[in-house]
Structure formats: C-alpha cells, structure tokens
Length: 457
Image (cartoon, rainbow, N blue to C red; front, side):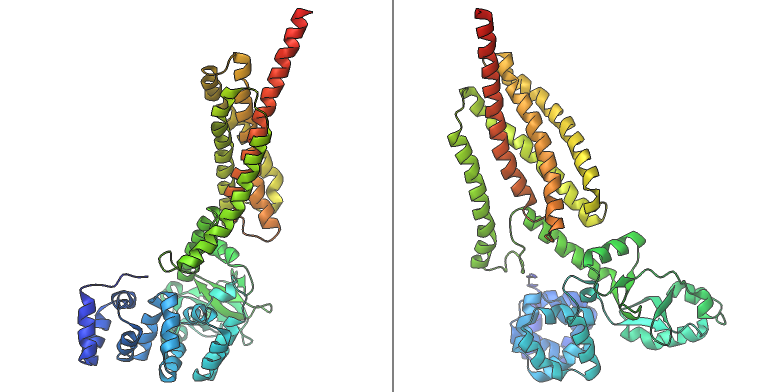
C-alpha cells in the first residue's frame, strides 16, 4: 500500500467537502497521475470516487491504475454503473486486462455491457489469452500504417493516431489483411524525404512474438534486441497488439519477487507483505515449513540411528553440512538465473553438470585444506583428521551437482526452477553429509584396526 501524504490529504478532503471541482482539477493537472493516486491513498472509497468524478474521464482513467490492485478491485465493487462504463472504456487495454483478470468472472460479465461494443471485443480478446503469455501483457493501442503512402502522408495520419496509441516510437506497417510486413521508427519517418514511400523506408525483418508465447521469451527478446516495444502476432502473422517495455519491467519485477519468495520456501504472495492477511501468510509459509520440517526430521533420524565412533566428530557436522548446503545453494541460484535469462536450456544439462562437477572439486579442495588444519586441533591423530577434508570435498561436490540438477528437474516437469530449490538442496546435503562423515570415520577406524592387527602378526 502506498503511504498517504499527510500534507496534501487534508487539502484534498477540504476540496471534496467544499465540492470544489475546479480546485480538484487544478491539483490533478499539476501532478503526475501516479502522484495523485499516492496522495489520495488515505481517502476512503467514497472520497476517492468523489475525487475521480470531479476529473475528466481520460484523466480519471490515467490515475486509476496507479492505485494498488487490491484497492482498484474495492473501488470497482463500490462503483455505480455510470462510473464503471466510462472508466473501463478509457483505461489502457493492458491495465484494464490486469484488473479484470483479478475480478470474479461473473462480475466481469455483469459489467461488460456497460462498455462500448468495440472495447468489449478488445476486452474479451485480451482475457482469452493465457496467463503469463504475450497476449496477457499486450495492449491493442498501437500505431500502424499501410506501405503505399508517402512519409508526409504517414506523419499526417500519425497525428490522428497518436492520442489513442500507447507508443508511437515504432510504427507497424500492415497490408490489407492486417498482416505485419514491416516497421519504421518515428525518427526515421521524420527525417525521411516527405515524398519517399513508406515501403522504401520500412525495415522488413520484423522481430515479433506469438500471442501465446510465454512471457519469459517476450522479456528475453525485448532485452536482447533492446526494443521499446515488440509486436504481437497471431498464427497468421496478423498484428494483434504490442508489448511495451514498461509492462515488461512490471513483469520482471513480479517474477523476481516470486522467485525470491519461492527460493526462501514461501509461496508467492498475491498482495504486498503488509496487505497479506496473517492467516494467508501463515498458510503460505507454514505449508513449506512443514515440508522442510519433515526433511529435517529425516536428518535427525539418520543422525539418531547412526553410531558416531568419535565424539570429536560431532563438532564438525554443522561445518560439513553447511559447506555442502552453501555450495549447493550457489549452484542452484546460478542455474535458476541462467535459465530465466535464457543463458542455458534443458538441452545444456550435460555441460552444466560437467561444469558443476569441476567447480565442486575445485571449491571442495579449497575448503578441505582449512578444514583439515582445523581438524588437526581436535582429532586424536592426523589419520583420523583426514575424515573432515574428505567429507567436505564429497559434500561440496554433491551439493554443487544437486544444486544444478534440481532447477533443471523442476523445469523439465513444468515447475518454476526457483520452487524450493535451495531448501531442498540443503535438506539433501544435510542427510548425505552426516552419512558420509560417519562412513569415513568408520572406514578410518577399520583401517586403523587392520594396521594394528598386521603389526601384531
């Protein structure tokens, strides 16, 4: 939730009480729409509608999307039909689509008749696009031109299209069937000879995305080609919308937040941290904590059932399993990041495992040396102290392999690679680390007894 401004809020309330529509419009015109939403956040729903009703509908539609999504839903549910229809018609299609997807489908069907037929068609088309697809991000407000007009004519047409276009930096060239055949930047169009044909100026090698293409691929293409916007086409190459950089930034931020939450064993929050109800937060955290509790219980049971022949070894168990868990978490984070950025794919798993095997050996050796020196201070003999470096080397290699493998496994079965990767890595390495520590100790003890028998014989 955006904090209410303590200075402007009393002034807004005073203007509302005096029904000073002119004063309200002057305040709104001087401020950015996002600032108006921020400053009015402290008003109740009825006061916000009084504020919005005092403004022209196009300004109302610019301010409304800057309220938190939960607040937008509350405002819509409290609005009357005369307020809903104009607001939805004037909202940017992508913002409107984000809002309507969060509403109850029956409520959406009830309010759609309040919208003009053309807008209603756009709404249904955007809502029909799958979640997390290019279609769910796109807007239908774009600038387009035919190829058989001059640059001078094109600029004249753009003057009429500009008020209804979210972005006119790129102009998309369409044929008579609305197939995308090229594009031209506004800069190139302005600098061109007014008598030059658009067909001779446009670039024909158009980078586009399919309407059902995953958002991850849309983000990767926009980042790779450094576009401000990218066109969205259907299966017949007809232009149906564009995805702009600001919508992609919102998506990247949301996905990064979700990945960070999932990697910490928290189900993604649908609302802000402070807005999420305690019961909901308890459920989202408690389910995964319960799962991790039982994985940790496996570690406890293994430790309880495993006789440890050397008491001094107990002090090194946290060090051993922490080394493996940390290296595994590093590998998991690197692979998750690489997958999300498109630096690698599932087909690269042999290379990934080879790299992590080598990295595990290098890192394990790096940690084994100080581990051995530390063990010498407590172990009964140098031979028994070797248990610690051997175990550290093993668990670091294992942690690196498991950390790189789990995200690939999750991706292969259609799950988010960030889902519980780090907690699962730690749980697996904990169990194996204890088993290896005790096994190496038993092995060294057996070798010592064997040598003693040989000397006596």
